[in-house]
Image 1 (cartoon, rainbow, N blue to C red):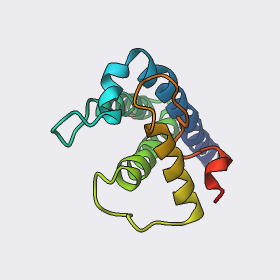
Image 2: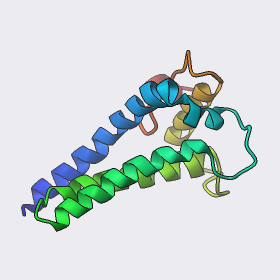
Image 3: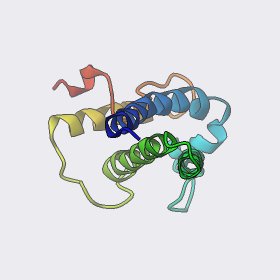
Image 4: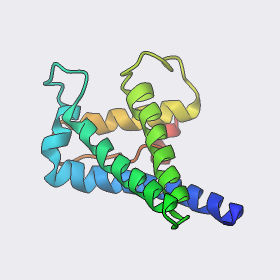
Length: 148
């Protein structure tokens, strides 16, 4: 196993997951699986959990499957699985904790990046329906949201 290649695959997978998050959010969550994502835009539930949380399970299964393939001779499965896992952790911290405050930490983060990501997500949530949405990414958002 080549360590440099392992790191490149890991970083490439992590980066590619931003595209996958955007694509999944725009075309699947705001498309044919709106029924699972709708409660994220409409707080019509009494539970801390949302149906929207089910999307996490899909990527967790993909990541775990890649770990399994890594343990069974396909070493590329490890950096691929860890890239997806790392993006999932980043998503959880940025989206669920920082933006939506599901845990009351990181409330005072106020640097230029934090403000831009928060603004973009706020614009996304101003659209309550599945149509006319914008800002579907999570870590990479349009530059205009970083301006004052």
